Image 1 (cartoon, helix red, strand yellow):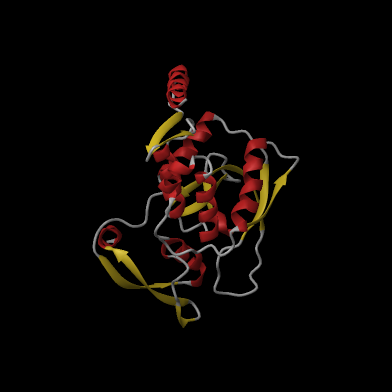
Image 2 (cartoon, rainbow, N blue to C red):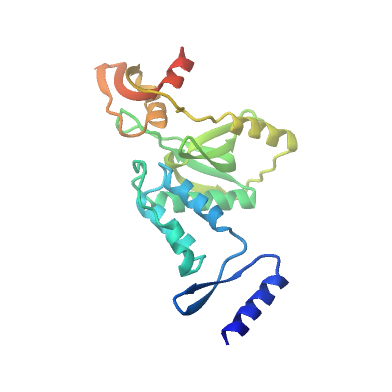
Length: 253
């Protein structure tokens, strides 16, 4: 019986381009399992590593991704996706923001429609009003350990504007809109995407103190995270201590 199963699985694998029925022996028993040919084990592992390295996802969301990825493979291979360390500070407190806002954005991109949303950047002033923004979404991308929404500029259709996805709130699709990008615009958008470089590099870490005005507070969080603790110097100036690598400091000079 075992020889027949081994022969049948070998014939099945020879018929297909991918080896999707695999076997292994444990003790006296031979085990057969199906491996999804559409996603290689190491490809899936790389995706999970990317999700876990992100500041954007909450731990609950990360674990949900891991579980769903594990379910694509046999019990024999699920150990590949175990994460021993939960690296990086979780900055996004609400895991539902990813599903709710991203779902609407993805649908708008698919249907080639504009979106309307509020961009609620962190602020040191209270009761700040957030105006509605109406733009054509291009894509969502991962850069600088953050998730970004890319939109076409309203004044210049060849420009690309980036928004941090965790600041994008109350997204809705503009139903009577129509979005279409030509080749020149797509090339312009791609150049913008290529210029979204990483903040940190290799090198010795130095603690420095930076002074900034309240209007760039959200930019400070973009670069250094929500764990910064600004100290008020006066009405128009704040300071904060941050850790930076030497290559970045040399670049600033």
